[in-house]
Amino acid sequence: MKKSRSIESIIYDYHRAIDDLIDDYQRRLAKIPTWTNEKRQLVRELDDSLKKAEFGYYHGNPADCGGPTGLGNDTVLVVPPKKRGYLQYYRGQTVRLVCVEPGRYKRTYRVGPTTKTPPNEPPVQSP
Image (cartoon, rainbow, N blue to C red; front, side, top):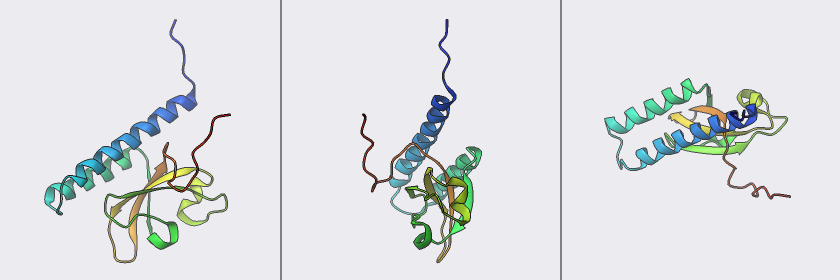
């Protein structure tokens, strides 16, 4: 008899697969030192993949949200419970912001839940 999985474990595995996909694209982008057509195509593919994964899309100032500034770069953060604006839909969640379009003052980000922990957060200790 096949053991059924909980919905939480299925969602966790889905988010982990998306994290692995983003990490793979970032490794591939890092291997190309200059902004060639190939590198731009990889960023477009990353954006399309995140769109299919139903990551949110918004414009923001990196100083306001702590977002990444480089194209294809990402930031993991915990959205505060009283956050307003574009990130209010992710209140209390750990999200990953990925820069998909550059701009001088405003950048375009894809945002979605993640299994990663923010770099400034202490690791979770087991009881």
